[in-house]
Image (cartoon, rainbow, N blue to C red):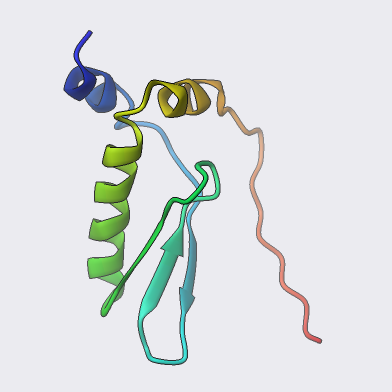
Length: 83
């Protein structure tokens, strides 16, 4: 199976994203499922477009496709605390 077909076959998967607006006003997005999977954008829409591109590139590697295949969380939540 070609890489592009393999990547497309995972398009329906849901992945968690952490989004933070930094002190300069940029949106920084990270996908914690994959090591080093992060990007930024001036707007949230731009950052989301960029993270899709990063994930597509990451999924070109066989080991990352295996990580995605084995990723089946039952529940995901994000909690914050104030210090």
